[in-house]
Image (cartoon, rainbow, N blue to C red):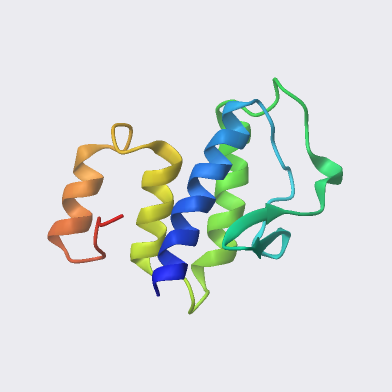
Length: 112
């Protein structure tokens, strides 16, 4: 469990840095994210686009596809999804109502 939590956090942080640098994977799915030493490694990099193509809607496509793949996984909990979201967006960028609802309804801890 502790390793899974750390990996969710690291994946969110790594993908945020990837997108901040203007990169987009274009085929980001669970099968294209491997674990090496507890850190995410992206594979199948044929469709990666260079700076300029990852802002706004395009980076959301990467996130949506990855979320869809992990949605049915029994190994990914709601708390893991929240950790990923906080790491990707940063705590200051996640709308307050999302955090309040998540914590109030007990859908997962906010602990990092």
